[in-house]
Length: 249
Image (spheres, rainbow, N blue to C red):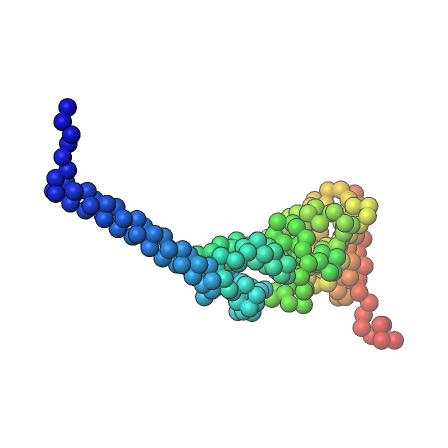
């Protein structure tokens, strides 16, 4: 068995391969170091923009965006999405929020606003899903019906009001207030101020009876009607407003 001789050519090939390997290691190290520096730089890169989306009627979008800019614009990686959501959920008129980061420097915020459909017991609001929420009633951009009732009956009151309003509007009438008493008796007030007692049973049938008799009742006396009581099986009771001259006397 003869020993293998190392020729000048094989020695040069070995050295060349070793140099190439070392160069690759150096390049990998440099690339890793550069990447590490880039990541560190990105970790301190600020959020440059907040994009706010939604259909706003009650909320001031410009003011809300300014608040977000002041409180949460900063480090991209350190901005806590949960904190942004909690901040927005505490704002009046906000129903739902979605927040996400968009690479490299943007915070995207989508806000769903509360849709108020009625005022409940003078100090709370009902949204279109029958849920109570609190917001400044004075800021309402539109007039809303007022519903009154015991705690926990807001969904029943809203459903009944919708049914009554649909029936009334078929005959060019409208309700603006509804009461549900502790004994579950219904009363409404029409847009012209007429108070209507409907009782606990056959509520919509009794309301239809009022609609049928309304033109006749208006013609019966010159004075305006103040209250109609439909809590009778075979008749109704009507109270007319006192004449102005009598009231002044």
